[in-house]
Image 1 (cartoon, chains in turn green, yellow):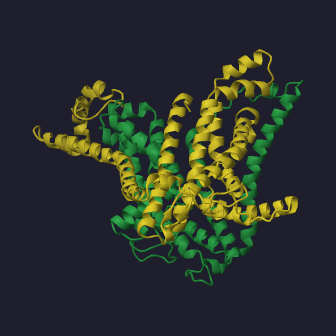
Image 2 (image 1 turned 90 degrees about the horizontal axis):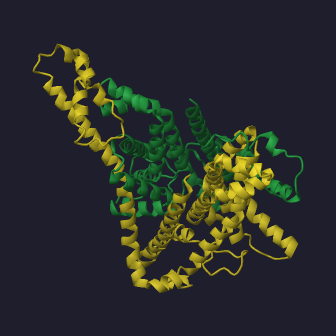
Image 3 (image 1 turned 90 degrees about the vertical axis):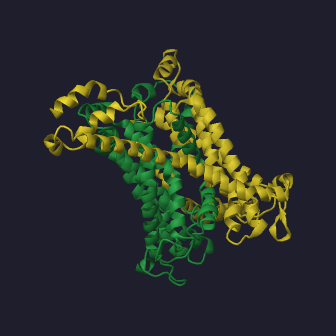
Length: 290
Length: 344
């Protein structure tokens, strides 16, 4: 995000020239309208969901057991945490390792780097339903892990891998070369430099990437329906089917039987994702400053 | 003594870090090995002994290099696996049904063995086009506002909001569409045009998708406009142009390739979106007659029927995903071509 708002372009002096043609007024009006509409839509969606949902947040909704009369979201919430944890355990070391390789180990003209970049970009463009289908074909059917926590988590791990990789790479690149030179100068090897000098100073950026990944996992539904399944119970093992909060929300909304509870579930889901993403954004901003 | 050893290597060890490290780079690990072995035992060791930590340090470096390399190649492995599994499971079905029949057949009736996905292709294209028509102008205008009209304070207020818009889960968008937009559109067309429509339509899906692609369009367009050199603006201003004229006649055209990249990325988002669309588009498998008609998208076809499909039906759904995947790959390719010119 370029923070460099140009001093001239946005200065009051140039924004408020005295005489203005009609065309300019129309353009100005359009620009303000576009901005207003974008922000208005956001506010409307968030506020609408909150107003409709918060009154229906009842203790019963957080009952530890789900059944068809009390559509508790607690199991789904627990499953979301579980699946996020497993997916992160897989994706973070891989993404971080890849980022370290790309920034610290591979040379400029390394052919692998180009291939990794291209494939990572391809991965980040693939729609989540295609990930879901791949997970179904590979983890669920081919490896015969059935619809389970682990199948879902691995699918998600592949999905957020490019995100983790790119943000970690940017965080590592932002560490000044002086740090590397200083570390090498003191006689530390490459590995020691990475582990002791670069990773600690890149931590906020890496954390922000991980948080964004969590945000994506929590909001994901299309990739999970056919990989993790829709069983609304807390699984007893890695190979049991689970239903995350997003999938839970989708099932409720498409059943259409518990509209009030669906609103309440939407509130929980929305707040969860908004909090996670705000945290990530704050981290990025602080990181960019300091 | 150890310090002197390290110092003697200092000039070589502090060469820039971007160098290829593999085997040519052996002086570096060798130089650093003594320090890896931690100073206290290293200092007290007999003269012949430091050989051993030297080897293990180099080994550690080598091992780390291999581990990081493997991590980096996972992306490549993942793409290869995804391609392989999709094509291996989908292509046989396309062959069995026949490519022309599959792509241009307008009847999707798995129960009687008819697998034509033309209605879904059309559905996806209509919905995406609608989202672009509605979302792109608003998004670009908002980006122009943020980078050339807004005061610093409003940017600080609006931008995080836009980023939050990107984080809202698609099921929440879908649900919002279902409970707000669908009734709204039904009532609107009923009271103003006397049309009795169901409300789940291409138009509804297009509106929801337009909202969903807004953050993508805004963020990337803003970055593109911000990247236009300020001298362009100042030059136009010096020639007597108004602020608006400078922006629309000089800055925006200069940022056009970046804005194009934003639009292409938005198309990719829209065509791949599943849950939100499934919830509001109606999902009928016939070719839609109008914007207010229901339709089914490629993504919707997969998610709706995969749960119970078997045999050729199942493979036909995977083949649907193959078609979608090819679309996405083409869009990615286009994006890369455009981005190369844009330098965002």
